[in-house]
Length: 233
Image (cartoon, rainbow, N blue to C red; front, side, top):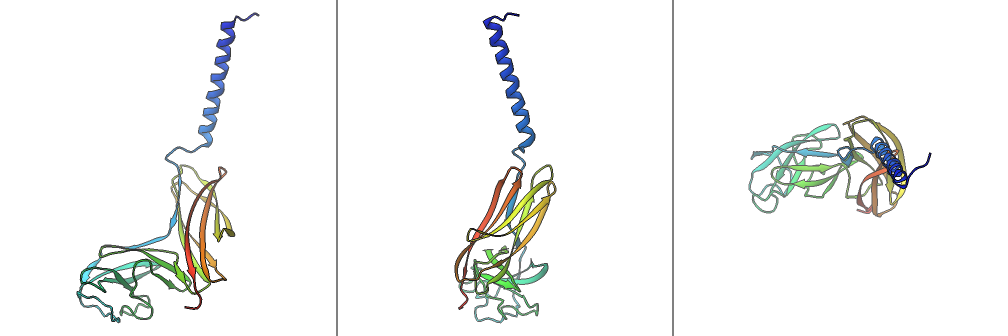
């Protein structure tokens, strides 16, 4: 059978079109839609709906200038703790907080504060950083900024926005060195809370990174922070 030049061009274009369609279909089956993604973020604890109170047993010279405290509670390490937010320097400028960590009904004793924004405190080996602080809301993350101990625990959340189960490779890096790695399967729309124990043997500034790879595409999502260890304090 003899083909004219026009027929040859037609069949060539047809074959190319079929090839392109096959490639598009194949990619659509292995590539998630734009609405499908993974989130990784530091585990937050939030206190809101704070209320005014004036009669507070505060064991600190830096207690409220106005005498009006903002009172609420916050969930840390599977426990609810009462807290107060107050104006330690200027009346009605709420810049400090105390958390009743020993749960004795008295605030700002036994290393309970006063604490300001970006302050690090601990509950056992779990360390927390005050990310946000004002008269309406307190936001605390489960990682430190400064510490004297070499052992501490960080907490983070992995949240899936995929429509199907996905397999993950979850890694902990300390100063770009891989310290821990584990595999995790996560269901569609599932949110998982994870903890990693960290060891810093030397003083100084250290970079801590949590890196999550979505398998098999190896798409990486990561979060990190810097922590200063000073054992002499």
